Amino acid sequence: MTERLEPALYLVPVPIGNRDDITLRALKTLQRADIIASEDTRTTGQLLALYGITPERLRAYHDYNEESEARNLIREIEQGKAIALVSEAGSPCISDPGFRVVQAAIHANIAIVPLPGATAFVPALSASGLAVDSFTFLGFPPHKKGRETFVKSLLERTETVILYESSHRAVKLLEEFCEYGSEHRRICIARELTKMYEEFLRGTVQQCLQRLAARPQQKGEFVFILEGKEKAEG
Picture 1 (cartoon, rainbow, N blue to C red):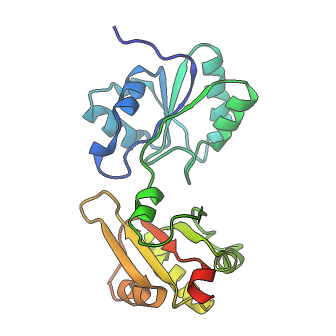
Picture 2: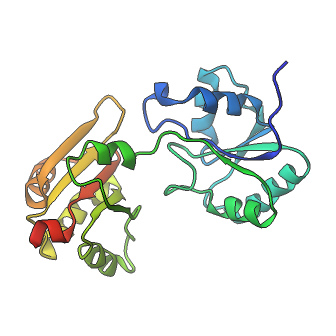
């Protein structure tokens, strides 16, 4: 008989690409949880099926229902249920839904159990060759409103800066770095981490822009690791 989990909110990281990266603890938690709240039930269902975990307990929890569903999940925990929260890939709350239900759990004095595991920016940073003693993770830049202010502000930072960006805005972001006078800074761009076409581009912003812009199209998910201003420009 499978041992039940204590009622709590469990934050469960899932692989960002390579399915072998899931931890034993994550699998045990997903097997034993009463409800699995997922950003993408289709993707999560495929992962569960791979490891023989029945997906009947899946519940959608995403950007569009986060506020109302957070209340429902807290109610379930108060009634004695163990809730596992998962993103489509990586760790909940890291540029993914989860913040509201974590806040609600804290306010309701409910235990939160965060499991360590996959997230894209950590392996990208460790392999970047740039300074890791001090860094800032800023997630995704705004698409339109506030984007210029956001980019100019991050270029003033003296520590290493980490960003996520979508494939169709990757070249644009590098062009903005050049436009605002940072074309000679060192950068590492990690693409499709842990997957078959994993790639690292290293060099100056200008060099990496030339390499990406020469491609007919950009594919995959990108992590940008940018050298801080003080180290680059003195």
